[in-house]
Structures are given as C-alpha cells and as structure tokens.
Image 1 (spheres, each protein chain N blue to C red):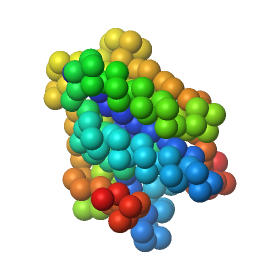
Image 2 (cartoon, chains in turn blue, brown; image 1 turned 90 degrees about the horizontal axis):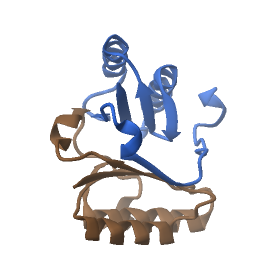
Image 3 (cartoon, rainbow over the protein chains, first blue to last red; image 1 turned 90 degrees about the vertical axis):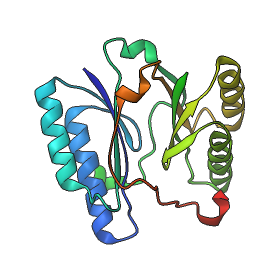
Length: 96
Length: 96
C-alpha cells in the first residue's frame, strides 16, 4: 500500500534537529523522498506498522507533527508533480 | 474534492523566500494548513484550477517542487495525524 508520510519537526532546539535527522533517515529506509518533509512509502501492513511505531518513538508529540495519508491502490492516479524533481537538502551532509 | 498540496520552495536566495511566502499565502486562501508546507484544500474543480494556475505562476519550476495529491471522497478515512496540531511557523510575522 502507498502511504504518504509528511512531518513537521520543531527544530528550534538542538534536540529537534536530531529528531528531524532521525525521522528523515528512517523514512528513507521505507520510501522515496519526494520533498523535504514528504515521503512516499510503498509498504505492506507489517512494514508500515514498524515504520509508524519507530516514527512515533522518535518524534516529540508535543512539538512535532506527523501525518499519514493512505493513498490506496490507485495512488499513481492521485499524484501530480510540478517543477523541480530533486529536492534541495537543507540538512546538508547530515542526510547521508 | 480534497486536494493535498505539498511544496518545497528553494529559499537559498531572497527571491525564493518571497515565493515561499506567496505560495503559503495563496494556499491559505484555499485550504487548511496542516503542516508547514502541507495544505489540505477542499475545493471544487473551478477553484482548484484557479489555485493550480496561480501556484504554477508563482513557483520557479527549475528550483521549486509542487505536488498535488487527490484524496477523493473518502479523504477523511485516508488521513491520520500524530503529535502536535498547530504547526510552528518559521516564517513568523510574515505569515499574517
């Protein structure tokens, strides 16, 4: 199933920057980064359960926001892209 | 129809910051900001056509990325949220 994962991590403090890196790193293991804080994850239910469990362990629920969009089987017909394909990476070398 | 609009605007240059503010301001007119660069827009086809036209005029297609996700009628069942509800606003007072 295709799950879109979007997040806002509050990076005002150093700990937030660390969370952001962890969230991005984890999402990379499960999906395709399509924008800076947007990942498209083609996962089975077991994989998704793992991803979500781990994400929800990493984030600070009082400061960070996480959204899942379940795009279903016809997900390709639901997506449209305009503009640059590669996203610029404000996290620089830390995103390796 | 519910259209999710997500964007990455390259803000390395001053002009990019201006584009980012314009994109966010426009999206606010059509939808609900759910994360910093993610808007849920409940629009009819005419409204969506206007929104998309305007967005695509604002962005710099070589540097910025824009994605539309058409969530369909059952959009409520497709969305799940975890964590903080309000997004922090890195654009500060400019987002009024």
